[in-house]
Length: 300
Image (cartoon, rainbow, N blue to C red):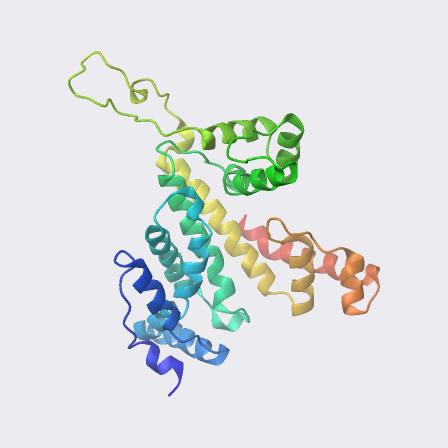
């Protein structure tokens, strides 16, 4: 009997219960072959088969657990991070197109991380620490970059602040202003404080809530507008990449869409891999970028 036929019957405990039992059960769910995955995705897309959607979700729960584990340093419960990641996974399953030639594991990774990021930003501090895309990138990379800098300098990253040159280097790498790096480091190193008065008995007491200035950048309408713009950009980029042939897509991804901390491939490195000249790689890249612009332009 195939995995696709048995997944819909698989029972799983809630992540809000015993986290160990949940992880153990999730890791026992059989992984899908590419054909089984396509079959389930087509059944969900064409027939709205919820059993097929459930099979796709169950078979990728271990991915959510692995991603959520990478965010434990923010002091939030692992179970909560997993629950939020599962929401992202379900959104990915709903939008997944099996005909694009991309496996669900790759497609879902963005949605899982996006939901976990949103949850951390809402709950890690009572006051928002990151409201723009650049600030979010700074928030989720500053901790690891500080640790790397501290390791090179053989100091404790928990107590060592960034020097002027280090601040400048971080700002350049992440595309933000140096003062934003300093502000984010200060916020992340500070302690939470209560926004409301700690006691109802102290009629003359003041708390930060009494003098915090209104910030229009966190108005719900502005936040929704920013989120929609980011969503359009991300979905448009996926559509643009999906329209390229495999070689062109790989060249663009390795040249311009590398993960944080990874080095982009050079024209000469790719030329050596494909057995062509660096000029040929440049031509393929230029043609692919032009084609992607044509797809992205109507959505921006």
